[in-house]
Length: 358
Ligand code: NCD
Image (tube, rainbow, N blue to C red; front, side, top):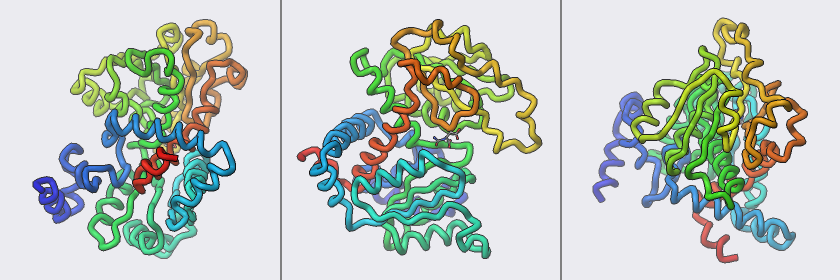
């Protein structure tokens, strides 16, 4: 009851005031009946949520293997519609969410650029999103501006027809469902090796502007004794806000600009590309990124049991010759995304028990 009143009060704040609150004070606003309603930040996902979603993803992919099972799954949300609002480039996140909707039988609409929506006529993103809520039961969105997904959810939760919002990437800030599929991949890969606890994850590349490494770092708080090693060019080091978060949660991390030195320690190497779309003056054009490339000759330095991950798309960070190495996990990681995103949608629509009973 207390929480409910508090949530009501939060709804009365101006957006600016709400946005400036510490995250732990406002997460309750994005829940209903004590369950996640909007999926906006990695910090919303507890170890319990993660286990539920991973087990549900495993169940869904098993059920979907047979025609009868997939046909049945497609009846579950056949009365629901999803809006995919992706106004920043996307291949995997878009198609995997679209596929996830299809697996559950949802009808899908899409807008992929502000140049084809009424935003070109001067409509605000807020009004655009409010409009989607007249037609859809779920909004999945990727936006170049940080905070727009949160603002959308904040605004819609106050309307008479609140619908869930999933953040598919919010500027340089977060990409929680990528972190979800990254962790699902780690969970599957280390299933017979004691799980994610006690593992060393080496994250490589543009850590300053890469939202996937940020979201993944937050999510790793749910595991015991994980060590993170951040390897980046000096200009592209991980942000202080992430380091403060890790210190606060007593998580172990190191920083370096030498990839080779840490390859033998890694249980997982998480490669990323340079995020030069965020350059203001071509500043990252002068960085020698080749020292942060994983090449075939590096493979012998890595443990036999280690895995290589990448959120993709890649440029030259991973030599294509590495694709044939059994430790290359990125193509499977991509497909895992479809299943765990299906599980997330099922969870938001509260049909997980029905699926688990099948
Ligand atoms: C990532 C993104 O958009 O942040 N891509 C993805 O969603 N798989 C990583 C990237 O673009 O480098």
